[in-house]
Image 1 (cartoon, rainbow, N blue to C red):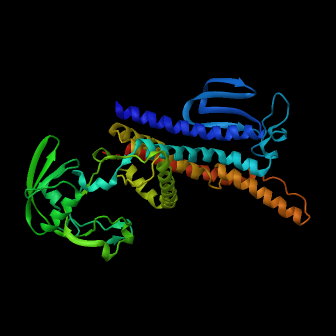
Image 2: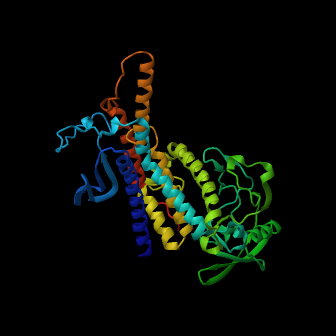
Image 3: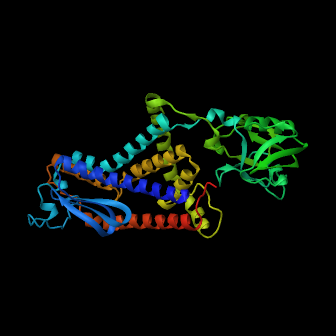
Length: 431
């Protein structure tokens, strides 16, 4: 029940963010004196609507977004105003008649609202909600995240996966975790009678036990279990090294024993760190810069991850790095809500808003950035014509751009269909 409620609330949060995006267009247009005639949340059949000051507001049945009607957004407007009898392109308050800088602000206002939502969310997170204090990561119980069936004796970079090359079960030693039958969620309590109080203690113990057969005590639920395993020697990253696999050098590696697990450090295990309103602003700026960098990196990586998305649809294990749709994001939001991981939940919401804001500024129709690019192209073209003593070439004919626009819509439609399908049949899960 909590999981389902979390999905609904997170999806509602995304819908509200999109509605605020459209409100950004609407109110900025009205502020400059442009004629905005409609503001609706949702698509499809109208549930209710009302008119006020010449604007129709309403709610539609399909909660898949929102839209606003600004007269004269394109020169090919054919809507006839019943009050004046003029088409949208003829109206003196038509958007296209206003200076290009005003039109730019109106079209960018949607993305600006997403950026504002992201900044506010992160500031609230750092200042008041708090984040897990990673300084204590090596002092929390060692909980098994995932189990590898083998251990690779050497660290080798795999350019295909852009990570450490996977071990080979046919030639590499079987991992102690596999020997013990460890499962995700198990908590390592002791090795050969030495209590394991955190990841640092585990690494130190495994380094001392290379080549030995040891007794491992662990907890599964309320039951305490134990077993014996042989600890193989392997090349591993030094503690504290935070580099991508292609950046790892010999100085970043050390020899030691490996259990063959990833450690699941849960937010609930760590103390909460709150920065307060002033320092929270600085943390917000730093986190935003990091998220923007990662957002552009994710855009760049999308094409190479599409094949894995196809594989996931047809039954292969879902790569957690593959793109997700709003459906998948809402599902992850539901899991975080169920876990009570408010820091990750708010971070996810902020990340999505940054993604939406940046994506909408891409200089392609039908995105807002496409309209901005065309407006400035018209302005520059007119300026050049005036300097050359030639007549103003006028406005861009949007009808001629229809094939390109339809192509972009088609690509986006296929991408959305793929991600939604994958999120239904083989979703990314935190469990």
